[in-house]
Image 1 (spheres, rainbow, N blue to C red):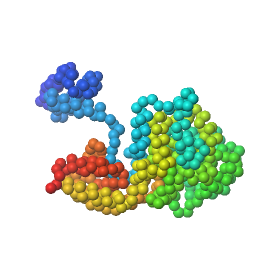
Image 2 (cartoon, rainbow, N blue to C red):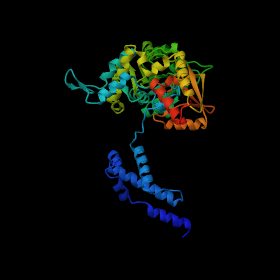
Image 3 (cartoon, helix red, strand yellow):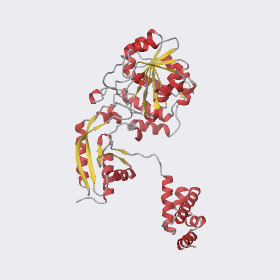
Image 4 (cartoon, rainbow, N blue to C red):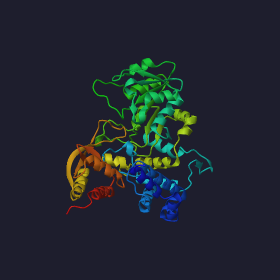
Amino acid sequence: MSVSQTISSEKLRQIPAVDELLSRLSGGPLEQRAGRPLLVEVIREVLQALRQRILEGAGAEAGFPSLENEIARRLEARLSPSLVPVVNATGVILHTNLGRAPLAREAVERVAEVAAGYSNLEYDLEVGERGRRDSHTDGLLARLVGAEAALVVNNNAAAVFLVLNTLAQGAEVVVSRGELIEIGGSFRIPDICAQSGAVLREVGTTNRTRVGDYASAVNERTRVLLRVHPSNFRMVGFTERPALEELVELARRHHLVLMEDLGSGCMVDLAAYGLKDEPPAGRSFEAGVDVATFSGDKLLGGPQAGVLAGKREPLRQIRKNPLFRALRVDKLTIAALEATARLYLRQDFDAIPSLRMIRASAESIARRAERLGERLKRIAGLTVELEPGESVAGGGSTPGQYLPTTLIGLKPAGYSAEKMAALLRRNRPPLIVRLERDRILLDLRTVLDEAQENEIERAFEKLAGVRAP
């Protein structure tokens, strides 16, 4: 046996047994926090990892203090929640990877209130019998967009699928080739259409489609004319698409359903704030669209949901579809959506975080950036500069359109920007930043309040170790 093998064998014999470690930890804070079954599982996991390191010739400490520290570390990792709040300093307002729209305080309070006990989710308090869960949002959302009725499912992809499955299964749906889009998560209009059982009839060309193209495609199998709002894509140059009113007239002439996938769910005119190509959903119903769908957690600023709104008869048919039950939302989503809709109805737009961020002036963000920048300059080893920049709506909304902002540019001494960004992601709360030309960029448009600004300062102080004099 070689010297290294002898050393390894000796180290393996020094590894304590599971019962020995368990006896030392029994009744202590680790068992009280995790419970005995999980504690035993982690002890075995730690000892197996130690054996593996020894067999591979790596340095390994088999003493009780180091083993107990490793057990404690792994238990904490197991017991800590995976889904945690983060500070979004990217300037992307509806950041899909960061959960899209933050909820309004009123929506959070309603969710907590409803979640804490029982509710009349499907109970009619007037007659004392079973009711309909969509009664809580139907009238509110319909009034908000000027439609006759509304339904809610779990996201906009589900809403599009449900409309097509109900109104066009086994029949044809006419859509422009220029609107056969794909958005995040490989959601493709042709795929959703195929899964719904509808047959897609493409018309026009990628860049130009006229109302006559739609008219030429209409036949006895046609049931739906589909229009997809370009909320997540842009075509420029030699382009053409029919006006919404032209499609409304064509649909009425042939007794067809005109459906519009609005995507982002804009409720108010944002043109004055720099987002010019996102008309409010109400304009579609003013023009005569039969059914429109949109997301709840994009420009609407509510929870993840898919809203179907439109005329009463097609919505009645959609609600009778057995798949509606499979795609319906729970009481927490309804509570948040109801609270968000009420904020719109009383025009309290700044209470909705995503709208407040969009409406924030460049001057107000510059003042915040100047104040935080001065505080960050006092941290050792951090070079701080302010510069003009751009924020975006994100979440597949308003592509190619930007909001002016002021960026805080940071260059850390002793770290690459990429390394610093990785360390900031491990902070509690994690801080998510932009990276550009080996610099960290902070955009305060998406930093919610002063408390989060303080968290940013503390995160950099912890990494610096000391505050500069």
